[in-house]
Length: 578
Image 1 (spheres, one colour):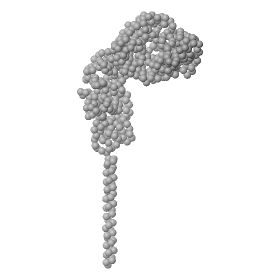
Image 2 (cartoon, one colour):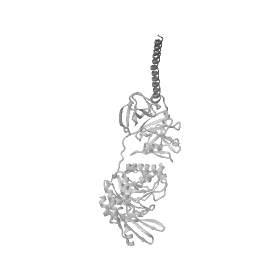
Image 3 (cartoon, one colour):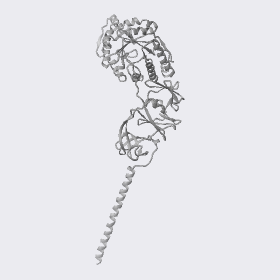
Image 4 (cartoon, one colour):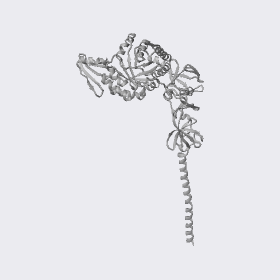
């Protein structure tokens, strides 16, 4: 019996221990699940913590306004002038920022405190400390100070801009910011499917910048897959989950201003222009002699006007009798204005509003008094300091020429990095013709070489056509070449007329050979001065270059200058201009 009790007792004790094992397993599983849940919460559960918009929009001053244009936030550094300001409750944009990112047409004169803007037909003027401005002299009210100078820059009233720049915007506070869109901006819009947290970054742990409301419209800026970056109606840039959006749609911001029409006078036929260098009235008197040595030109451009000082005054050699003689021969007169003859400060002439106005008025007055048909602008070797003033001069002179029924043409050397600020595309908008001076490939500041090789001309035309329509581009070619002399003391060159070269070669007993790669004849010989080299401009080389005009459908040809050409050259030119 005792043995049986002991056996039953052991059996009971074993059953007692086995009853506790499931409990331990349950507890263990509970802790595992709880720990996993805690880890999941820590790692994956969305945070409800809100962050400040100040963490996104960087501002260094209390009066600074952040700027968003077409969904892009522009973040200034502490060293830069703020891109936007809030002054007396009005929003302003910094001048250089405005020109770079919205509209390069605004030109501010830091000397006289004047802002200018030109449309296709009108000139807008605003001055410091004024809330009114003028359009072709007619007053208008902007409702607040238009210009806010500060340090070495100026800020322009945002509410003023939509009058002339096709831009719309809205503003938000805390922090101050202005959200702008330009006409033609292509974007994707969407609607929030439900209330959604707009987070600083894509991810549930990122801080919430805005509590988006169901039905709120947003602009989709970037698509990261599960998350997308959006710009909200509240001016917040942040991330929401892609599944929280509906009704995605591609939209182009509509224009609110009428389109601009840049009117151009046209000759209605191929231009055959030649420049006539006039330095005194005696040269004007030689016109019949000059015309007798030409054939087929329909435009002559005498060098009549020169800048004479820094205030916009000009030397004037114009002659009404000269014009009448040309008109009797069926030849138009486009008077040239130059910055070469008299040393002036072009930056003062072009950048100071009153000086630029004087120059435009003087040119129009002199041109109409002489009865000329057009003005040809030849401002060479300008410094980049003149960039804005030169552009505005072309705009304002164009508008004045249109009112006076005058042609406007502008001379340019081939595009290079250092002269791109001449802005040939803007010239093409405002001027009737753009003239490409495809010569001076090599000159006194370079090594010896061709004045205008065919590859050089081809490249010059191709590069200019990237900015100027073919029907407005006139190809200018040289009636001269350079004679290069190299001696122990160095290398020098002298420009010689095309008609002079055969005489030089004959005197030296030299023979020219055709250079296929340059498409021109080349000669060299030695004399008492050293080695003489000539890359010859003649009928053969000119014909090859004029083919470039034909191949590209250009508006015409021009030649520098009358008096340097042999009489027979006009026979070579005729097929390319008739």
